[in-house]
Amino acid sequence: MEIYADNAATTKMSRTATEAMMQCLENQYGNPSSLYSLGQRAKEKLELSREEIAAVIGASPKEITFTSGGSEADNQALRSAAALGKKAGKKHIISTAFEHHAILHTLKALEKEGFEVTLLPVHENGVVRVNELEELLRDDTCLVSVMFANNEIGTIQPIREIGALCRSHGVLFHTDAVQAVGHLPIDVAADNIDLLSASGHKFHGPKGVGFLYARRGVRLTSLIEGGAQERGKRAGTENVAGVAAMATALREAAENMEANAAHLLPLRDRLIAGLREIPHAELNGDAEKRLPGNVNFCFEGIEGESLLLLLDDRGICASSGSACTSGSLDPSHVLLAIGRVHDVAHGSLRLTLGEDATAEEVEYIIQNVKEVVEHLRSFSPVWRDLESGKAPHIL
Ligand SMILES: *Cc1c(COP(=O)(O)O)cnc(C)c1O
Image (cartoon, helix red, strand yellow):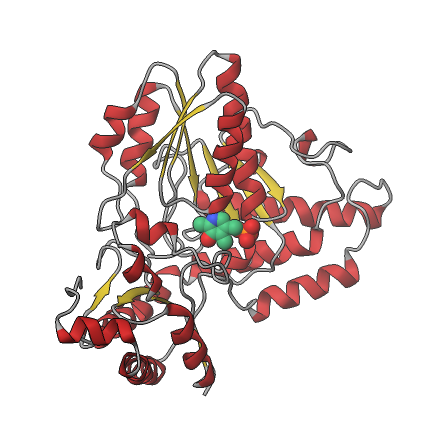
């Protein structure tokens, strides 16, 4: 059995997206900036894809800029808002402690450039509180950046309320919606979003391509100098085939969104219920306000890395912490942000189901996680101390 349960790290390209990519590589290989018809056919494909993508989030095509992925879109969104803020003499930015590193590291860089950053707490359920955000808003706040859904614990944030609050205070609002686009309904107008980042490979499109939505009137700063592609906001010959495949994947995801959620929710909840039977285990993040396929647990007395390796032996692809940090010994900053202590945060497991997941696979995962956790605990000195009462149980 081979079960891919790491869809928050990346997804498999859908068949239709792969076909759209091949078709484009073979037939629209011209440079969209070239004037002959082969080039113009590529240009048409690009603009058609832009229209399709814009429609899914309720934007207009001119508000969509293609990027190399979610990280670049995040960098460009923050740098653009910071540049606009600086011009207006506003250098305070509010974000949260559990953002993706593409956000947190860009904020660190902006701090070095003289911006002041305040990180909002996310509480034990992994959800920000809008009233606490309101208290942090200042006259010199130029930007609020809060992710739509967290990539590790899957918790969904009150985006529409945050957007309304920012709009009423005249502060730009950016959301890293990489985990949400194609999975949750998004309407940039109703949600009061000024800037939004997305990535193709998180909704069954290709890796290395994404987009940034910037509301009309929000001027983007270019990160890459060169040609005048993307209305001068992103130089470099466009990834036409990648964009076409991303648009196809997004259209498909949007069409099937309700059906996918209806299929995934009972599987997710069964997985949560099954893993809760393990003693001294706890779900990370709110049980309801979370992505349809996301399950994230902490188990006392074990190491997440060992758990992953043993699950891999049994054909289960899962994750502990985020893909970017696993391999380092630091526990996940997301789990620390929701108040898990270091020891417990180390014993975490993230399972993110794909839309093709089955009930049999979920039962197989539950059974195998139970066995592996029990096995690891049987020779864990930490677990021995907990069980003998030498150290107190936390979970
Ligand atoms: C994956 C991810 C990113 C980075 O996207 P890339 O396309 O891999 O650069 C950013 N933010 C979140 C929340 C993500 O899950």
